[in-house]
Amino acid sequence: MKDELHQYLRIARENMLWKLDGLTEYQKRRPMTPTGTNLLGLIKHLSIVEYGYFGPTFGREFPARFAELEAAAMARLNSDMWATADESTESIVALYREAWKYADRTIETNDLDTVGRVLHWPVEKQEVTLHRVLVHLVAETNRHAGHADIVRELIDNAVGLRLGNENMTDGNEAWWAAYRAELETVARDAD
Image (cartoon, rainbow, N blue to C red; front, side, top):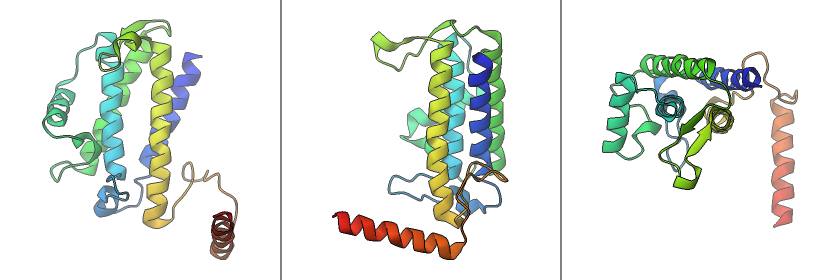
């Protein structure tokens, strides 16, 4: 079971990075929703999430780089959700890959029933197992992969799970336009 959960996490991580492929710096950073959701910010956020849940939760110290990000996040609300001008795509992607290695070490060296503590959760829910954290991170990463799907589609109409496996209905531009028009009509009629 641990291997399966770990594999789902690995797939979701790769799907997140695929959403950056072929985009300009502006497109990667562009806030596409009223709350500022952007692709590079999602990657940065997930890096910090993996460090946090697979580090201190199980008694591991933060790497120096994560400690700096945590300090910055404490100083400025929501700073984990976007890349500053000083943070390149390469540095954010490298941070995410470092977080994977760090998290993978925790996953590989512990059993699913290993107990940890998530200190920012309510007191009655702080005690967790590695199993619970793995399920949480698979869900969290896939949740943000869904955000990334929509943001990427808004940017350049690229959709799907990953390159070569879009998992979308076959249809050309005209078919999709007609499909969307039909949905619009149904939505208006329902109102």
